[in-house]
Amino acid sequence: MSLSPDDDLNAAEFALGTLDDGERASVAARRLREPELDAAIIDWEWRFAPLSETIPPVAPPRDFLREIQARIAAGAQNGERSGNVVDLTRRLRRWRVAAIAASAVAAALIVGIGLRESTRVAIPHEFVAVLQKSADSPAFVITVNLDTRDLTVRPVAAPPQPGKAYELWIINDKLGAPRSLGVIDSANLTANPNLGKFDPAVVQNSLYAVTVEAPGGSPTGAPTSAPVFVGKLFPTGK
Amino acid sequence: MTSAASESDPAQLLLQVAAGDRAAFAALYKQTSAKLYGVVARILPRSDLAGEVLQEAYVRIWQKAGDFDPTKGSPMAWMATIARNRALDEARRAKPLALADMQESFEPAAEESDPLGSRERSEQLAALMRCLSQLDAEKRQIVLLAYYRGASREALSKRFERPVPTIKTWLHRSLAQLKDCLST
Image (cartoon, rainbow over all chains, first blue to last red; front, side):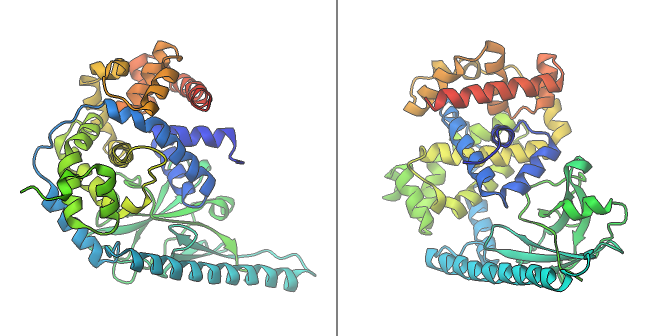
């Protein structure tokens, strides 16, 4: 296991719940891309979990079962979980194929840059990131032009979120807490924020994450849930 | 009405839930909701927030039932972790309120200061308790309050009247010590 001791402690504090907002959001985003960090968090959750045995039961204020079942039914309509394991497995397999194809395209682009630009110094101005839930589920593609610092969000396979909104965030230790880049248009799932206020190095080296928020975006100015999709920029060579 | 499913143990019910069995899910809810509400309500004293989080936790249990790995621990511990994680997210979101609430009700309950007193416990809990008992009293309290109440470093800093970086250092030492102890 090659996780650094610092990251293991981040994982421990994430599982325990003591990280501050910015750190919590940042670890939540990183775990989607870093399987070792994710595994360390799960290990830590299991280390603490036996303590739950010592917590006495408390009757909920009312029976929530019907409301929960209604939420599950609404979610199933949006394809969250069909209730059919075979369907789910098929869907995962399809995503995996798509992800391999996406990585192949990325690899081809990078090799292409190497070949074409080997005789002169290439300064890439356009960057692209595939925002995904895990390695096998691309949901959004974002493109950033570093000259104009225009960012474009396009949907790949992001499911619509009725009654909720997707919000895009830029996450970088240099910025402290995650900064909102605005709400993604719910009808066509696109957005065009400008990153003019961010340093180009920050724009280039940040994580980009999408959370599900109330319509109009997070009321607090900070993400209110763990990111559902996350990705990093790589150069396209344009 | 007593269905066959409601007499099953949580591990069996989870397995059925993973296969999309709605009756098993209803039985699982009836068996476990008070336990999970107990976990959530400690972190979120506001019952409207706690109720909301409990619902979200069960939606997630429905979605993730297939991920449960019985070799890692009990189904109850797994479900409690899901509920607790959702409660933590909510506590951080509603931060100013949660912090204010915590000031009033921050006296740890009996089982929080002395979880050793609980009668029924698994081997895993016994091992964790043995390791927790090796920490200094104050550092053990910090870990336990973080676990039971979802106390952030900031809230712990106020309660123990130490700067946040000190709390962080203590946490890191305690957590490293716990990990060592649990791996032996």
